Image (cartoon, rainbow, N blue to C red; front, side, top):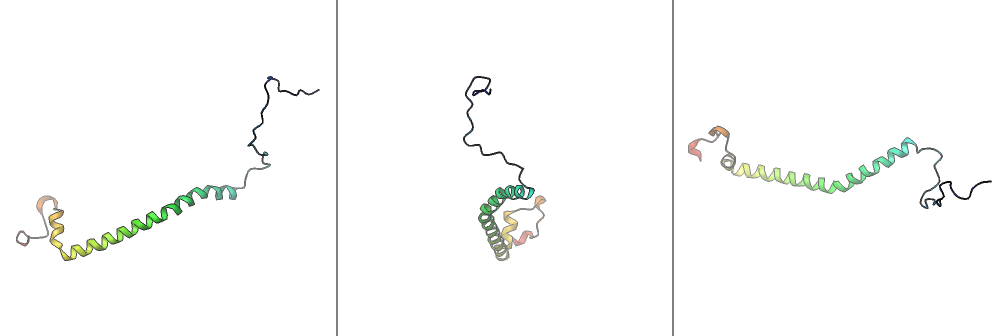
Length: 93
């Protein structure tokens, strides 16, 4: 005769959220697809940030080159060369 209760005397509560046990583990392809989902999500979310960074970098490079062509001596005054050796002569400042 089988017992209706477990041996320890407490009521056995089954997990209501547990599904049936799978017959076999998932395939390697399914595991690879599931593993790429978070990576794809982060990549898609960071695309606008990367595009904005590239645009800001491009605008900064163009603006910097334009300012340097217009005012080349300003760069020497703003960023002094160590040792005082500058491409601009003392009379040109």
